[in-house]
Structure formats: C-alpha cells, structure tokens
Image 1 (cartoon, rainbow, N blue to C red):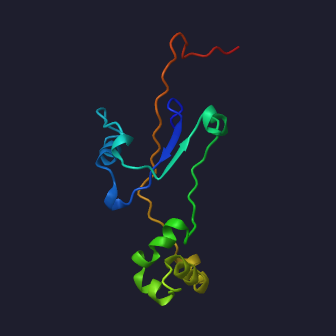
Image 2 (cartoon, one colour):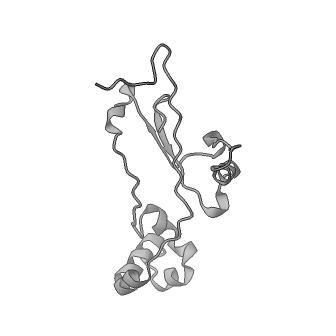
Image 3 (tube, one colour):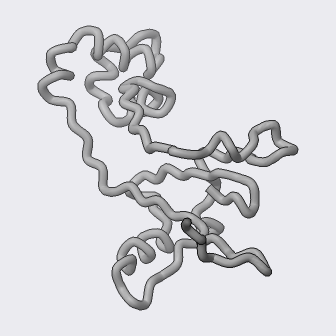
Amino acid sequence: WDPANGYIKSWVFRREGFPSNLKDAMATASDKKRIIPDPNTWGLPYAYFAIGPETGCSADHFHNMRIVFNLAFCGAVAGNRFAKDCPTLAKQYDQNGDSWQACNAYLRSNPKQLKEEAYWLIEGVYIYQRELELVKGKSNTTNSS
C-alpha cells in the first residue's frame, strides 16, 4: 500500500523464484544494518490496484485491512498447477486434459483425505509499508485533551 504514489501492489513468489533483495531484507530485518526491500527489483507484481480520486477507487476503502489465506484448492493458481505438482493424481483423475477439472475431480473423490491430511508449509508472510513522510509545516505530534 503506497498512498503517496496511489497504488497497492502484491507479489507471490515460488521458493525457486524468490528475489535476492527480498531474501537479504528478511535475513537482516533484526540487524542494525538492514537491507531495505526494493520492490523495483522483484519483477512484475501479482496484483496492482490504482488508488485515488481519478481511478474510481478512493483510498478511504482501505482501513482495518486483514490478510486472508484463500484455501481454494483448485482455484486459478492451484488448479492450473495440479498436473505439474501431482502428475500421477492428475493422470488418474484426468478430465479431458484439463488440470483444473482433474483437481476438482480428485477433491470430490477424496473428501476424507482432505480433512485428515491437508496442510500448508508457509515460509513467511512479510508486510512492508512506506514510512509516512511528514508534510512540510505539519507536526508529527498530536494533542490530547
């Protein structure tokens, strides 16, 4: 979320495609000499949302935000990877060569398997935000009465 420049960007990285700048930033997050994350080196974002009066999406929509893990097992990303990640199962549940349909056919045939053996390995979730810059002539203190 970059209110100064009017956008929200997000990235999703596979382990084998993780940007070196981001690895370095995470490794030095607790150090006195930290590597600053540089999104300009991370490649194309997974999502980009323009925010501001001229975009039709005003910034006042973005408050009290939460991060949600969408567990759509055969969604646009997971379903398209089913044949690559699970080739034996994809072949067994093949639906006219459609990886997404094979994934859904597998899930329909194995509901118990999903309840007992579903797990995720998430290496980390990191949220970076631009430091707010003081507007010239404005104070960074608040008065309370």
